Image (cartoon, rainbow, N blue to C red; front, side, top):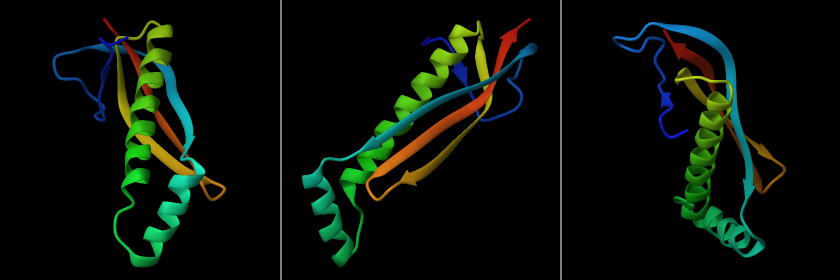
Length: 106
């Protein structure tokens, strides 16, 4: 799985490939109640809410790892045109999706 190249570009320089199909990696995460209270207090005074930034960074990494695993399960060598999408679920959960096109080198 670690050998799966993930790129946001459509073309991989020097590689010809065949499209296998769509791949994705999903995760939904939340912070514990104590962290949510701290974030609410920070919301009053303004500034970065570092616990949520860390949570989103972790969620991004989990989503990419799952994307790579999905691609590896399909026999892919790489994922092109990778993108992220995220959204809130309720007031304290965040969902992150990584998606792209799995390809096999020729």
